[in-house]
Length: 255
Length: 224
Image (cartoon, rainbow over all chains, first blue to last red; front, top):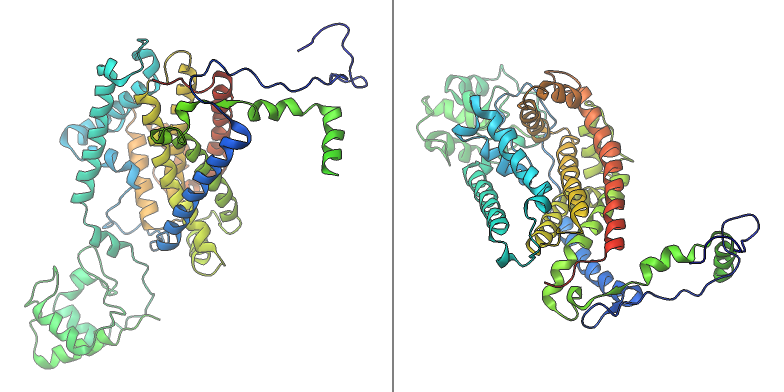
């Protein structure tokens, strides 16, 4: 580029008055067949992007994003779970060497060392070699870290009770429960409320009893014989009471 | 007509060299999947950028409905999800995009790491890249709270406890983020909203500009 005295500008600006043709730089130093970025390669990138976008939108349409019920800070029984990419850290903090008095190790020291090493990788792995086989220490450390992350995420996923998690977060219909009804009294007497909640809203161990969509016969059967993690024989009353209970629960509709 | 407008502007501002610099570079064979299919690993960085653009656009539309206060936040998200035309799609794009951006960025980081592409002279670009990684994690963490549902609140409580475990400055960091030493509530939501929508995106745009300037300046790393 021409600089300095003798340059002609447009008016009093710094834009040169004499146009120079745009000559692309010389790329002959690159090995193999190079390709112009504009427009050839960009078109291909565009196509990759389009395919990616279709897959992404299909995912979006097939799986609506989740929304749990509105935050209730007083609900102390809720078992929290972070987004999936923080699961390994969450799992790490469950081990005894990284929790309680040692939380600082799991929360700060180990992640700090890992991220610090990642940040400073160019200064830790200083050799001129680029091939993975020629720098076994750096590659080995990274593979170990990857294995640890996969293992911790896996452990976190298999130990988490996903059904209970889905149940505890459900958006529940607000229903006025008539606590003076005969059916409610029977529920209370048979310890149903311990798990299903005082407003029959459910809890970590049991689903809500509102809007179950079950018939009275089905409710009676479950109350007597249990279902899923609910054992049988919890109901101790008479058949007449069972009938009233079943009709009461089956009649609880979400509004 | 368009040409004339372009020439009129170009004569005064000399804008041609700005975009010719991007347009005129050659793409070497070893990064071109048309020549070597295994070169698809070079797509991860570009796809990360692509999802980031989706995140910015969908996020801009989400803020048209979202209300960052504890009384209305959940209601506004529920309304957006169930009543607004295409609201479910836009929120879905932002929700799933957040995961995809982490996946793509992780793959991009691994590609650069295993190829040793961070070595001299590209050390600075690597550091900027790791900083982008941290900003993205921060965006994921702060965005998780905004719908103000059960998992948002309790995951944030756990996250703040982890931040609190930092020696000496831990409690101060927690108070700075949550707005109160103990309560995770109204202040926390507005702070996380501000961090998620203004502070971190500003940092992200700056870092990305540096990232792209450096890659243009240095060119892509050579074949192994």
